[in-house]
Amino acid sequence: MLNQNIYQDEKESGFFRRREDSLNFMLGLAFVGTSLIFLIIVGVYINLSLKNVEIWKTFSLPKIFWVSTIMIALSSYTLHIAKKALEKDDFKQYRYALGSTFLLGISFCVMQILGWQTLVSINILFKNSLAGSFLYVMSGLHLLHIIGGLVFLGIIFKEALKYKNYVDAFVYSVNPPNQLKIKLIIRYWHFVDILWIVLFLFLVFQHS
Image 1 (cartoon, rainbow, N blue to C red):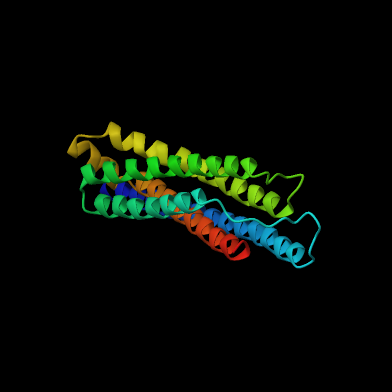
Image 2: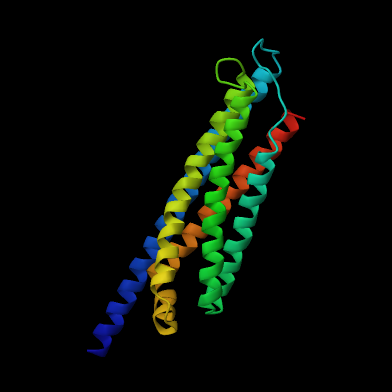
């Protein structure tokens, strides 16, 4: 009976490791695919900007995009704090830091939309500015990735609020599937944060 239980535990452990490896691999592929998409967009942007297209129409980036970039950078920091708090079984700090990350992510989305409204107010539109069109496309496509991340952040934040009792929170935190879920979400969020910062620095250089 004991040998059977050991065999079953090893079997389940092996299955979970294979599942973890496959999910990590799929997430890595998603990172590569997303990076290639944005790399192609940036390449086309640079190519057209060098051709002096008539309706290119350069402009200064609205300052609100700087604010949104600071917010998304802060969200990566608060998520890092949440991760460290969970490792130390400090579930209260984990909830606070995770909630802060979620709110900063929502604030980033709001700021991006306000940034678009600012562009419209200075007559930077798809029809009269190719440079503006690329900014809308890049920031809009990235915003979709952020919204996707917010959905999953919202799920683990809801779970963090659900298990407020220390014992319940501890049992939740040591559960391998939950650990994997949190790990993947953290990796994804850091990726989309870094992606925006790189895009933003590129745009600042192009519009300076």
